[in-house]
Amino acid sequence: IFLGNYSTGKFNLNADATVKDLEILGDRFVEAAKLMKEHGYFEPNKHKLRMMLRLLFRFVWNYANIYYNQIMEDKRIDIEVSHNHPVNKFGHFWSSVAMLTLAYPCIYLNRPLTCCLVFLLSHAVRQSGHFFYEHQDRDMEKLKFGHKDGSKKEACAALLLAGVVYRYRAAIWEQLHKINNNTPNFNFHFTPSQYAVTVAFLTILPHFVEIVHQYGVLRGISWMIKIWTDPITDVIDFYEYARIDPKWFLVTKDPHAVYRLDPETKTVVVVKVGGCGVNEKKVE
Image 1: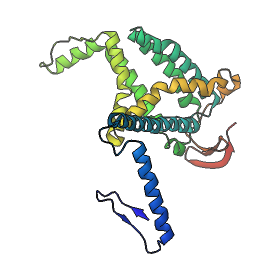
Image 2 (image 1 turned 135 degrees about the vertical axis):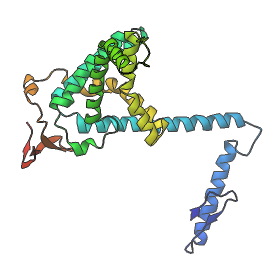
Image 3 (image 1 turned 45 degrees about the vertical axis):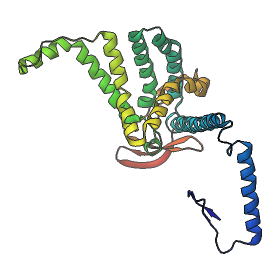
Image 4 (image 1 turned 180 degrees about the vertical axis):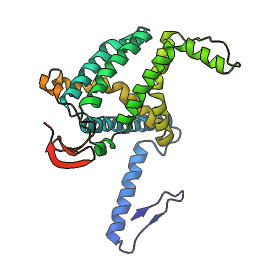
């Protein structure tokens, strides 16, 4: 039996349908009609508003569940493929603590410069685990949704450039004025707080716009919710790594090596160093 979404209520039966099949189908239509009557579907002037509100609530609730599950799945994949080194987990735990106890409260206390400074320092700790310690399987990293090592490094470079530009803004503007006399006289209206907040938003806004362009507004919003709630889930996921053996700080990654991760055992092996293949060796 193939039901079709037509205004005339058509459905198609294949040649194998028996009389018993038709009886079963008829019983199901009757049961569905009884349920629709019970819910007031056939009573346009009675409980119609309540029914519509219930349907709207269920629609919104189901959609919220879909995106909640998507966000949690994005977090799970992110942790499984890019957070396996103890130092990386250690850095994520303590940077998350700093963001939750210092940076986020500063937003509500209207202290943007302090907030941006804490964010900068905590993310320096957070990303150092990726840059210097995490033995990243590049193929597995492709499963992640959002920032990857390459885009993170670009964001770091942009932050450094923004700092240099602000520090030497007057000299830069003067040189531009010498090159082109039509350049207006320097009049930098941003306060340090405004500049810091603008630069902070520019570290995530381009990627948000890219996601919206490729996947839609709701997917972009779900990604923003993910990164804003990452400190909460990171504290829950990595609290066991609040203290680690100091020996792990000596186990850095080789930037020229190629690593492979077994997602089942969480074992990482070296498969290539530089341009040369090597016998697979477990990373200890």
